[in-house]
Image (tube, rainbow, N blue to C red):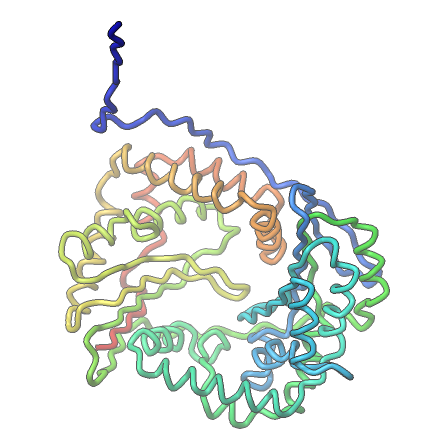
Length: 428
């Protein structure tokens, strides 16, 4: 008896069918206000027995009176409290499978704890003690100073470091956003500076707490209430003025370098602007993903760079468009001309519907990928709260995105992107 098998070969010239749902729903979360008016935002999911807690607080770079005080105070939180030094603290958390993380930023800082849900009763009280009662040992400060100075020494050998430094100075001048920490700043920083900054500007300015994972919320609230931030003041700090410097091209010669670094920046619209969805779409088409026009023109067609991208950066006191690339040495001016050619196309040539649909789908798919886990979702909640946006921000944004027509791309490009307003830096 002969058995015949019929094998259907896959036709690789035809794309497989795609089941794509473009609808974005609001992320569901709950809110509890602690006794000292600190909002606690949380999402519960019992599928995995883990928990993540993040304290978001002020006293960031824009609040500094002494340069470096924000970075050093936040990064020394794990360096010791009364009766426990850094080694003992690390051992305590490691033995319980817990992880403590610090992030210092321009507008706010954060202090995070991740651990198994069953260990939260042991771990959370000490985590909060690190935040409430740091002692900033002198020897740990000296150790961190040396490490940071070594980082600066290494970075000063990179063209990308100088390009980033110079574009910030060009865009923001004397505003804190435009200042980069120097070795001189580090040398002059004292333990008293750090202590004053922490207790006056950071610890007393807790902005929110986020929690995600498997946990009993009443249990968590009880722990927070017994380790409360009694002196929290939600400080109102005067805004820094951003100088309107004249856009220009800044160049820097870099001896013994095999490459050039390019940065182009331009002040732009905020997240709450009515044209933000269209502007974000334009940025993605232009240079916001691997298949962007800048990548095609400058990397694929001409081989002038390994990678080039444009991004929208949003801070409390400014928003800006940034184009970045590390290039073959000596081609910076050529690349600037090519960038302007691509911008001219965005303004004057109607985009093909196929490309427009592809980029819309990319943005929506990326958002869905970026919100797969419970920790991803709570980070989105932190984003909208930090930026004073509505709970429907993401769903509204993506709905607006779907409604954008080709001609709208031209109109918004002409309206919001002006090459004459570019601050450019080439480090060669």
